[in-house]
Image (tube, rainbow, N blue to C red; front, side, top):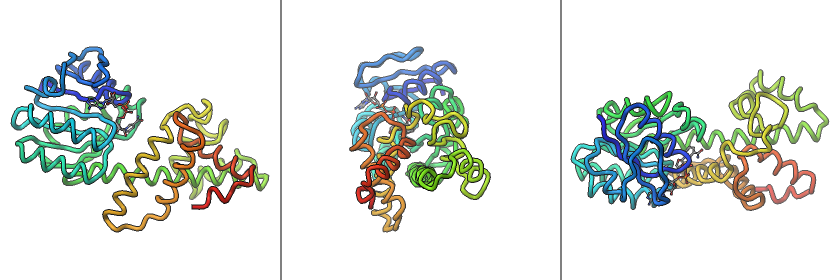
Length: 298
Ligand code: NAD
């Protein structure tokens, strides 16, 4: 496989496309913003990027955009081409996309990622993949260039399912860790002592041990850089909303996920965009100081 079409050259897509070009693939990219990526040819349209490509990769904001872009790709791509959607989108849209692409003779995969902009630039993303195993095998070499790990999770949309389950754990666990620091502060317990105990006890988790929301405690994290993301709260909110949509459709009760969504809604309304999701510790501390605790009740 040599020729790749890449649609959506934003914060994530641009470095992913650049890594493929660096590895020797002929990448033709398209983005509505007209952005150019080093090593990649710029196509004038989605169709031009898709034509003749053996694989077309999309990295777009949401399910609606993916649906519209995929319609143009499906009309232009050659039979048997891989259609790899790396965006984080809702499960229902991902399932519909698989059906439409398969009916048109393409080989679709949903392949959302974890690892953020840093992982995209370093080529260390984790891919979670749903779709046909043979299509997954054909795409493996591409995942190896763009990432460090590619997990086949099951049939159509299983990658999106794994992604939203993982990020629901992350949102809930980050809030739990932030609450523990706020409680420690109120009790007069030293933050470092709380960290030393919990990070090596049953409270240990990625949100505490690797991405500690308290500045000056634990390894360096966005908390030490004034909560510059990192992983922005609005992206966490997007993923929590997707998890709750999926929970409603599957008739699953996820009360902690629902509470996490409400708290991140309040965070984004109150603090605005562009703050790391670990700044939840500031939201909780502020509400405690201002006796605005009823606002946090979900
Ligand atoms: P982004 O907004 O930086 O990039 C999206 C790009 O798509 C933009 O450049 C935009 O111009 C382009 N676009 C929009 N509509 C288009 C269209 N019709 N045709 C062509 N291009 C179009 O977003 P991002 O941070 O790169 O995220 C992309 C996806 O990856 C999202 O689904 C996001 O949830 C997911 N994701 C992001 C991160 C992260 O840390 N940024 C981490 C994991 C997953």
